[in-house]
Length: 135
Image (cartoon, rainbow, N blue to C red; front, side, top):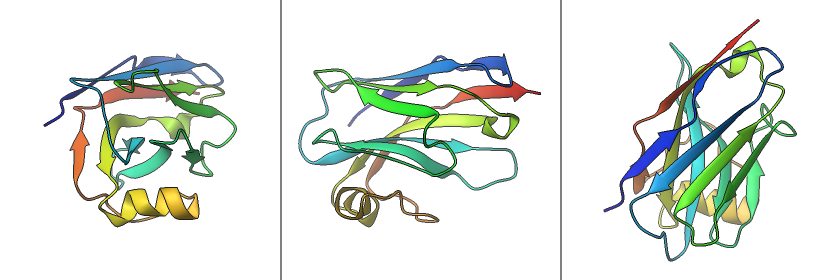
């Protein structure tokens, strides 16, 4: 079992920045992906950034060039640096640990893309942190 706790959400104006953190209750070992998802009101949850156990990163087109995913050396903390925020970035942001056993992480690792419309299997989720961007 892994408990994940996100922090760093808040309200900013368009063009601003926020940094999210996600602390895991233990070091994440083995082949896996750690990722950030977000869910806006009335929309499906979507993956926006992922990093695998080999520190390979992928991003959704909607955040590429503006967001940076990273993790600390002992792999128990995940970060998301968000710059040039837009009102459409308003959502609840979730961190996740996704096992390599499922297609989601496998797609990230092999194809180098975040699989659109695919819910990850074998996943631990945080409780979410709200990000609100005003125009």
